[in-house]
Image 1: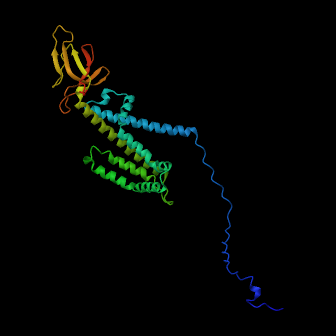
Image 2: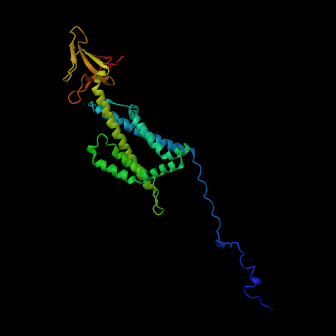
Image 3: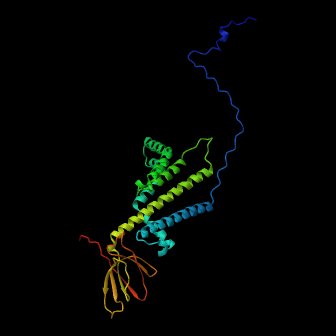
Length: 318
């Protein structure tokens, strides 16, 4: 039997044909284990969960409105040396007075806080170029990563408390904002956030937000009281007629003696109504001064007659 020499025509089939690339090597086969079962879908939320969530949010908002109304009302009437506990305001009245905080700047800040997290999706709906949307997202991530700076800035402003008034509410607002931004940052796999840590952060941030509301409500109450005191002549005018002479502290209102034949012999004018509660009239004299003048309290009984008249209206150009 004659052996075919190496490189002879018998090896032609083993040599690659000219102009044809050799086939790439096949990757080694990897044995796959049994298919893992898919995670079951989360159970649907029951209506009771939604009701509990709505009830919790409503309770928090209601308590916050009551607290804000109390702070505002206390600051307002304390300017006139009155205690809201002595006057006697109901819970409903305090809640209604909290609506004074719903000013245009406050509503604008609230709308901005709700709009910023969903801004990238809004830009996508508005068909903004993807490059611009990506820049907005990168800017948001950069701001969120600097949450520690917000907290530190807030604590620094607290150290400068007496020099940043009446804008001291900015300090707790920065701290609360920084804590909330910190919750949005992902943690490494080896350092997951414990449930109690998230709850504690939310609690502390909520306390700082409550402090912000208290500072804003108190400052707004004092501002309204100062403005009303400067324009006290525009309030409802009060005429007090009494059968006995009343001992108004100096400088008292304008006094007239109508004669002994008149049942309500003594008349007092130049008074303005601050508040009326349970047949008690809290009065200020025209030109009331916060530093020197008292607030008069007149109780309506059989010896006194109270007349309410229009105050001085502001002059308008016709």
